[in-house]
Image 1: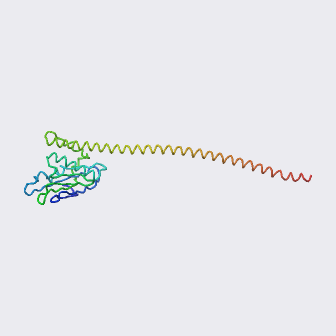
Image 2: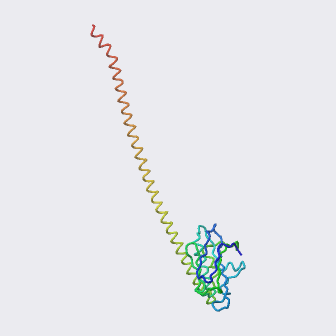
Length: 241
């Protein structure tokens, strides 16, 4: 059916946690499988809380990872997928419920005991390989409002997809804000660099001009010193005339 990554059984323990592994890339498929056991049928109908063991059964509650998804995204996606599945099947969420808690799935039940159990497992699937859409949007293909259960499931699906769209829009808005901040920073930095370069060029020109003038003055003083030195012997000879 797939590669098992986590499994728990609810019996006398009413809550448990399934650790989700971080996706290796876009298109990786995660599946939640459920198996119910009711010793005498007085608590719940075990078959209702059993998804099955075939490859097709593994796709009843699944999430397809998108690029950049974390374990938390997978946990959230599987919890949403189970809520949609429960609505389709008319299941009682108090009998078995799934919620996301960080990078984990929290499963709970109010009816399980030592003989009436519900087991849950998370697998990574190698099929269907043709499925590429992720983020829960694949549920668009499954919407069917011809029955009451289908309408209930469609409503749950649409509510989750709207929330996913809102979350994605918020992420885009946050990214846009960061890009605008970086753009403004780079623009200000560019202006500062241009101003600094202009100042450095102006300062170098002034310094070069001052040095040239100093060299010219030194040259003139040198010429004058040589002229005075050349005139000194003539002045001494004139004393003996």
